[in-house]
Length: 304
Image 1 (spheres, one colour):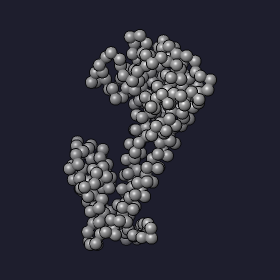
Image 2 (cartoon, rainbow, N blue to C red):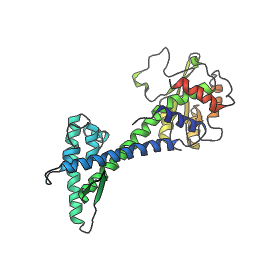
Image 3 (cartoon, rainbow, N blue to C red):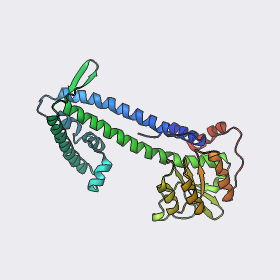
Image 4 (cartoon, rainbow, N blue to C red):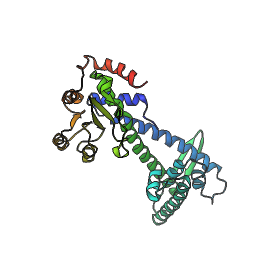
């Protein structure tokens, strides 16, 4: 599950055009999930056909097999590794296996009790592949549905987080290159200074440099009115804030703190970056007349 270079480029293009980039991420989530579902169903057919003893919990035997990767065991049990880590303050494979088995047993018992009380509920999930089919009863079907839901949620959370981290730095590089900012006037890390441990390096995306002044930049691909993101800028003493959407309250907060900002999905969009560069006295040039053509050149330099 990765944000490819092409997807990153597509997201940046949409951001610069003031368009909603989320369709790119949603499309990836759908593709990943559907592929997982198909592979999962194939595995279910194989596992149930191989189960010789009908009294054996074939699903648990096949899908909570200790030899499987830890993250797969967790998902198949109806959990994810992040939840397990939060519960036990550890995510070693041993912990994951124990937690997954315990959770699965509780889930299976809950479903069994539900089925026993809901006498009128009838559900059979039939899976066919290459002329072979298996039928899952109510309990088995609910286990499978729950696993699919957990997997979808895990994919969604992971991919949205990855999208933001993958795009933020090349987005800033693209803005600087479009405005002809000399390379000595921007950097991915502070030059000539060791970053402090409490400097939240992972959260700081970019730096604009003017003489001895090194201005922290923050990029957040967020929805309108997210107070945490604006507060984070203030907490980390960022000088520039670039976001896809900003509320009027966000803008007032940033202005009061003398933080330069750019709202990508607004009138003028990214072109407000020109004002930011002027205010910070960063040397730059005018935008090229054909931005789409220039983007191709810029992307070749950034995505080497």
